[in-house]
Length: 429
Image 1: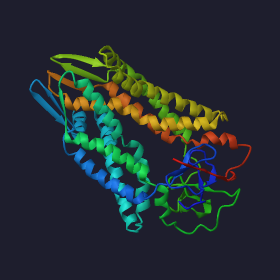
Image 2: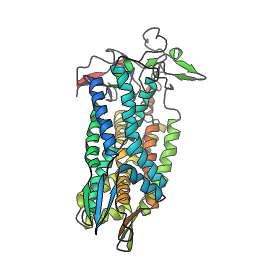
Image 3: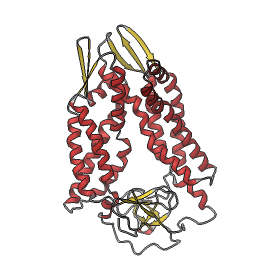
Image 4: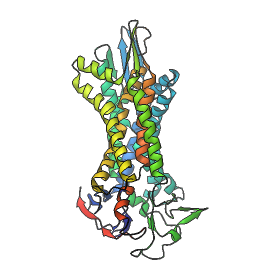
């Protein structure tokens, strides 16, 4: 990013000048405290090296068994893809689709897209398709949940350790390494550096003046006048990344309320109905989320019970309550502590994905424990509702526009396009 450039905070909408940021430092919004820019040294080379390593690890992680299950002389093995196939063959295609996308497709596509973008940039080339590919990377990041999958594997191993022999496979170690490589690649990537190399369609006539109408791109953060945007029918597109431009996310409140209401409706059967049935030596038992937590507490596995309780019960309730609070506060045009409400929104965005732990645990158990009447695990209807709760709350958080929190402060003070300029604070990481 060019130093002293004008950009708009994506969390509060304030226009600010980004000051010079030292290597390894960051610039925070002067109003909401959100991070607007990080100066990552040697970003392209580091991210490319980590991405190439990630592609290799991803291939290994999906080519060999993750775990083996040995009981009474019989053995079953599972890979990431066979666990999805087992769910699909058992009739649980909604869970299979969610696990396939979040555990395999999203991380794989993220690596492929990064590689496709970074290779031309390191060769000082700028293909016309590069901006469209790069903006998809940001879309995929929240849906890649390999770190959540690894926690689920550890939970499943602890649950099965007393009834059978669990043997880790080569893919398990590759998966563990891949998680760290992906996290390091995301930390090394500087999106602003990539966008600064993308040519702008047409030239921006002059710097933006105070009080002048403007619109900021939600993807590449380019601030332009409406007259400088590309037109596609009655819609405006960003002249740099070609994403649709809008002052706020379209129908943000309506979409968030609809998704949140659906999540609340699904949350009730998700906790009342069994999520799985376990067959052992001919006898079957069905478990809900609560009964699973109680079973682990009763057998002294309180750390495991705490993990499941937090991820499967506490976090979903917390997400629902925070989202309801944020939506109500915006609709009532409350000006109460907007900075703290923006922080609550960040919490919802950060913790939402971890509720998938229980879904992944079930996936692993179904794939491993396949010994007929001796021992088997089957997903039940409650698991589908719970998976729906996780996905719907994530979509509700993504549909909510945190800039609406700050709009109540501006009404009656400055009009649209007349927000004052500020200077973001520079600091060190």
